Image (cartoon, rainbow, N blue to C red; front, side):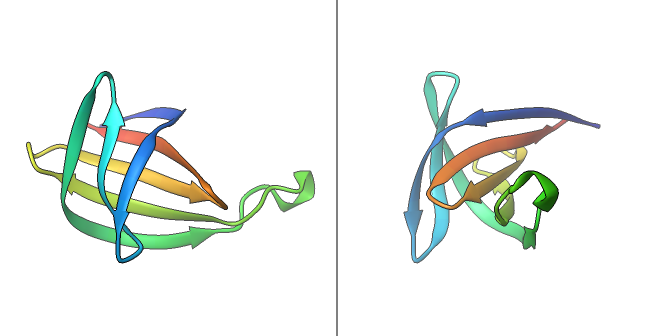
Length: 79
């Protein structure tokens, strides 16, 4: 199961990949990038391409982040 959050987050990157992000008053450390892909989005609404990252956090949680040009969002949290 998963929950869509789609909220802006502060992300610290290293070599172009997320290394940690700030969500609910704490830093979440990225242990590994599980998957990475691009989505075009709603092109008919002039939505820009987004780069998604499915990550495994240091405490064991799984999250999806996306980069929309220069802005990061936490898209999904997996149970």
